[in-house]
Image (cartoon, rainbow, N blue to C red; front, side, top):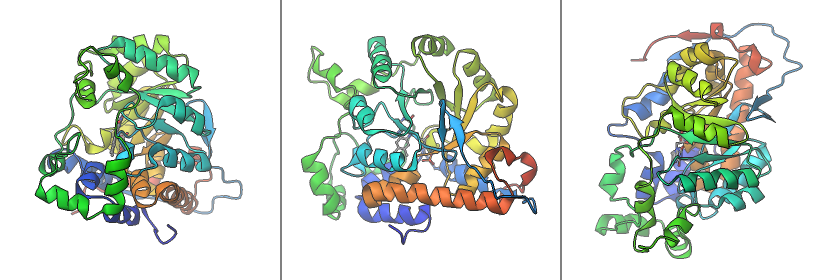
Length: 384
Ligand code: FNR
């Protein structure tokens, strides 16, 4: 994968590897995808103002999140249905995360069990949780995470209903896939993906599958059960409820407002994740990078701030940190690598991000994350 020089090269590798409907599920966003494009272009609207002649001989990019020290301020965001993108799924991603020493968060809707994930992860391991109508299931996740030695729980709060992802509607992407003549040809065009994926592996939400197995009506398809399980009556009281039960760091993911970050902190969270779900949920939601400063003003020092959405360059991490974030998180960049080259592809994505970040830091005159400050940034407004 060494001939892939940036994340967009890995994206092209994913285009080559995946049947079109699967690539679109990975890559796409809500409605007109304005929110998706804006997440990245908002970073381009910020220029860097480097500081000259700073002693960089003792550069150190380490930082602390979820109570662990990590080599540079990046983590791998939770993504569901990972096995759609490569047969090795979370196993491949965990291998690369372990090698890089970066935290990796398993999704509730992931394709590896929490127990297997715990066994294969040596880097900080996190579990992304939803509050389900069936509180027993949520409580079960909490105890499984406790027993598996997870370093933190991440509660996602921006998916009470699914976003309108029109690429998926056009492609008829559903579980199980509904193949028409066009999609059949799209799958047939990528036999290296289609044969092992369609015949060898299942895409079940393995961490919730046992619930359906024990239900009286065994005919309910798993995804229908899951979709019906998101509790849309949850409020901050439920965050308190979760914080009281989980003995460890708790993050709330999907925060965009300063007052919500403050609420999260008051309810017992020690990390907020500024995120619009990678532009897959609320169309025209604000770009996460534009919310860091106000969130940091509200909660700096009391909770850690992690930002995700649209991060494609190491310089984007430096910009987010200069505005007040403690770390960043990426979804699609590592999934492009996974689709294009399995564990090696994920490692390539992480190496690219690290190399670009460290180069940006050096050219900017910042020896450590603490040296980054807002005066190193200049807003230029949207480019023409
Ligand atoms: C996601 N994301 C996500 N988030 C979450 O909390 N639980 C989940 O199961 C998923 N699933 C998921 C699948 C896919 C294919 C993608 C692309 C994203 C959102 C993810 O955690 C993160 O917020 C975004 O991916 C960040 O944006 P970028 O880096 O993809 O631009």
